[in-house]
Length: 156
Image (tube, rainbow, N blue to C red; front, side, top):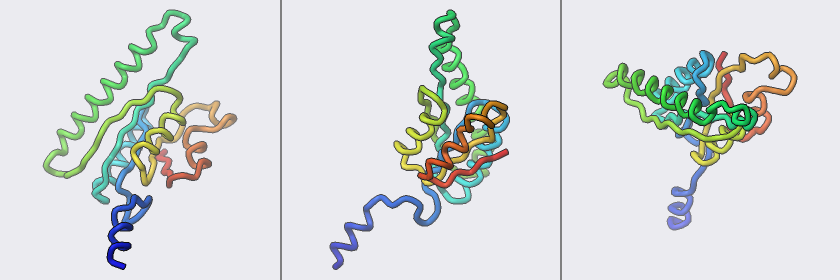
């Protein structure tokens, strides 16, 4: 019976004893930065890993028109990392928190799903969409909620 208990103790189990990994989508928008701040507070209080995820859009149409899309999204990712590092440095010593920054390419929904799966996320936090078209086709937040795989918090 002890052997059986030891086997179960090492098995991954989603959602036990509070979140261990919180994934937050960031893209530089005001709502995503508010989501990151909210997720950072959750991660700090729960002693969880904060995984900040930027999904670099792949825009074939932009590339066809000669726009340097990949370079632009790489610059956004670098700017986000710099901003996050500066914010973390300001609170260093006050808050003891673990965080990582990840980038994925593709559309935001699939990128966040991939990140949450790979990182074994217990929770996902996103900012509310600021685009009017999402009322018709659905925002990333609504699609994540409908997926029903993780608790999803949408920060206004």
